[in-house]
Structures are given as C-alpha cells and as structure tokens.
Image (cartoon, rainbow, N blue to C red; front, top):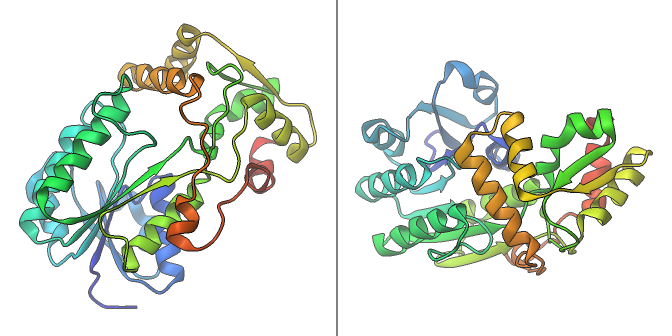
Length: 290
C-alpha cells in the first residue's frame, strides 16, 4: 500500500462508495475517504489502504484539508436540496487545491433543461467541472438494481414491489459495476474528458424484473404499477424527504416515457468486462429478499 494516498473518495460510506473502497483496496490502491464522522465510519477505517479525513460538504475549510495532496477525486453526495451547492463548493475547493482530475457520479440523461430536478443539478455541476480546467470523467448510470432493496419489506411480507412506470423498459445497472468503472477511471489513464453512460446488458420491464426476482427467490413476486401520487405517498411513508420523493416521481415519469431503455457499452468501454445481468443480481441478493 502506498503511504500517501493521491485519491480522495467522497460518499465513501454509501452503497456505491462502499463498493468502490473495496474495489480499490483489493487492488492494493491506497485512498483517502472524506467522511462526516470518523467515529461513525469505523468499519471503513479497517479497510486496508484507507485513510479517513473528517469533512463536511457545507464547510469549505474541511473540504480543502481533505483535498490536500490529492490528485484525483471521486465526487458523490446525497441527492438532496443542497446537492448542487455542495458539489459546486467541492469543485471550487478541488480547483484551488490543485486536483488534476475529478470523477463525478452523475445520472443517466443529465440535462440542464430536464423536467427532472436530479438531472438538472447533475448537468449544472458537470458544466462547472468542464469550465474549471480540471480533467474530468462523468459517470452517468441508469436506475440502480440495488434500488429494489428499498422495497425489501413489501417483497418479504406482501411479495410485491411498486412503481409508476407501466410497461416501459429500463436498462438497470448493478452498483458493483458503477464502482468498478469508478475504480478503473481513478487508477487508470485515457479516461479524461469522457462521459460513460452506464447500463446493464438488457432492457427490462418491471414485470420482467418481478419474474426474474421470483425465479431467484423461489416464490411469486409481483410488480404493481401505481399512480405518481400514490408513489409519492409510498416514498413519504417510508421516510423519504419531500424534495427527494418528488424528484423520484419525476424520475419515474422520465422512465415511463421510455427515455431510459437504451443499452449502452459504458461499463465495457471503461473496464473491458460486460456488466452484470439482472439475473446475476437477483441470485446474489436472493437471501436479502427472503
């Protein structure tokens, strides 16, 4: 392990960040993780090659301390009302700190004119990075397969999960493949000034997803199509903040139009291997839904 990490990971304790830190550690790459609380990130501290720095996206001084000596940074925040400002603050701090390359987790179809709030803020931050003069790579994944974990209770207790998407197809991606792309970009060369559109290998309806999950868990799981208003109420009832719940409803309206059905080669382009199929995900996570 290198004694002086040149890579900074933000969002390191989240789903994608956890997979990314594992990916780097398994390759023997040292990295620094910016976390809100070192005390609460004790599991991460035990990962070989990890160096923890306390930092807060709302406090530029702590960001700049975490960025000291860093050459490449992975930018990921929670999708909240503050995300655009927080990421903009990070980009400014990274530029001042002399960071050479930012790898930003963006979103499929990011566009400053999109009706979807998540896609607008990602596009705004992408443009800030482009205009900063730093090298950049934007990772634009489609809907996460692991998003189904949010329906664990209803899948276990009612054998159902829900969405406002009808029979539109979507080329979902496994977050382990997103992490692998991020890991390759952060440690390799030739990824500068590139945008990787990240999808799984196939485009599926939610009914087909339910069938595949049924095969993996050995019982009948059903997809139930619901109205956007009902989806919002379901999200609020399980604890999503209103801004985020409304954003997810906008996401599903975008999916329902078939705007996330295309299969693209971003995972293979960045890593040289094919992305995981939904069947693969379902077999790996069958125990979680049982």
